Image (cartoon, rainbow, N blue to C red; front, side, top):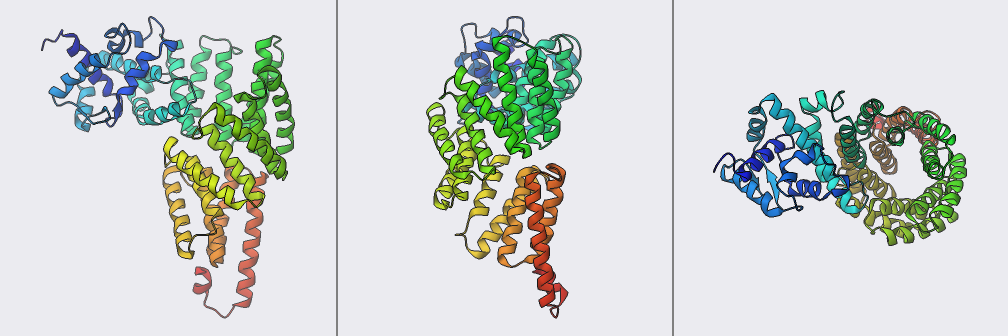
Length: 488
């Protein structure tokens, strides 16, 4: 085969591109989605110069792609499974990158990162979430390379294209609730955008907004509220229809962050204003209006207005299902909230049924190791009263160990699992173990949520009760050896 053969040239570029992705499960869909994404295509962009684009002038052509892959297969450089996923041996993967000159490496990195960004659609259907989940190891591998660290946020050429790439890649981490990484990308990207854009440009504002949302999900709510309020104040000065609409979005962000911080009355007032405006602009049955109503229902739940919350959330669930599927992250969030409300109302069977359906769907769409999946499992364990005595305790321990290993000790889902295990210890009569674990829960809650957060206050009250229970038992059973009391 000639070195100038188009298939050979394309095969070489693919090999170089693969070397900047993870060596396992490289999906053909990455290249197909990038080529089909005419919405974000720009002539003269990095992706426009790629062989994937040049070899397929009339659109995605699987035959052309297959011929290039066959060249790599003939040389035993890759393998392909029945799902059209491409695999490389780690040594071949490393060799493919090391054999390139510096100039070739930079070009291959540019093609790899721009292809991944082009393949990401800024859409929120279930399949979009699942695609971005599949892409995460490849994004992580590419961002870990020296080329990304040296060039992605540097001054110079293609600044607009590079900040657009980062905007897309950050979605992968936002979906995965890896907010520390998303926040770091947004901070670096903000500097990049400010090189060529004014501070009040919508693209700059959007990055600040996403930084605030990441901070909120990390429970750094005070910092998030400061950013939201500053954005809202700065935007108030603008006076046109588009600006008025964006103000409502900013107000909803602030309301949702106040809800996460435990400022329920304040959040409720803002959400009622948001809902009124959304109904006037978009209508009562649109996605934006329904999601704002769902946030209002969560506020009412925390304010112990459960009947009102249930009525709103049930209506929202019907509306959202007509827009999305039953197994969509937005739908699952509403179902989770409704399960909480049902449980508070004493409708335990309905709550249990919703929670179990939600868990199955979350495992499928978000993955077994996603924080929202862990949180859902913790809720099921907490609410379960039908498990056998020993089995329930072991299930709680196992859930906590997995959460600590994957998410870390201070992640919100891990703290929830700790609280559930402490409660289970209490039910089984292990008062000392329950107290010790609850002390760790309170320490982590103070670190993550803050001393005065309503959720922290609840956990502190539980700790006080446990300490009293341990003291009372020691008073009555003073004659028992300490080693026995400490183990119970």
